[in-house]
Image 1 (cartoon, rainbow, N blue to C red):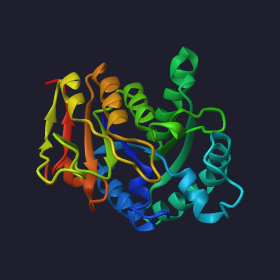
Image 2: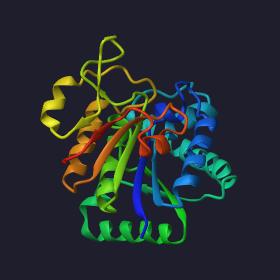
Image 3: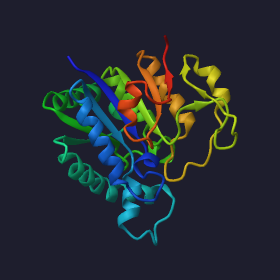
Image 4: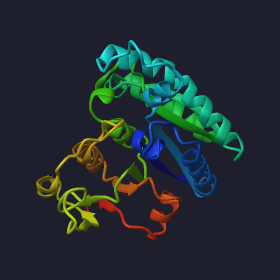
Length: 254
């Protein structure tokens, strides 16, 4: 039976450091999934709905308040899925959209129904693309960029691993954007100890800093699921991380 990998792709990775969704990065994702789906079931947790809306609508009259962000997410989500479908179709990858809130994980019936849906999609070789339902829930658009949501999904499906694609190679002993002598920490088992190294930076379009990734690791530790922070800006980052060809930080209990 294939093991499950959950990949969370954040806004900063999807936009490749610009203010627009990068089709090139989505093609990079598709190529990797095409290779890995022979061995794994892949679940994609994707941010980027708000960034997509900004790309296609005039932002005049919109503001940074939560209701505007919710409305922009509602506009951008179907367009983002259209982009995924167009690109992934070229690689013979069938996609399905799943919009969730945290309440879906708290209620036993909702948990069971969510699990059944995901299992059925995987059974029929569909790639679930999951995002927060920002119309009724706002936590991830305020702080988190789907880090927590991806951890909850990984725990729900008993994933082999959760990969958090970021704009950095992993956790460093200092902020590498401020300190040239910062060193990557390749392996972490003590989440309390590593908290001392976290020094956030402004994160552009995304909302998920290193703190939210540590919180995601804490959720996965409860189910003994390894969490990897990888640099999504690298081409072929997921395949190369699985083959230990690129640097990353791995959170593991043992």
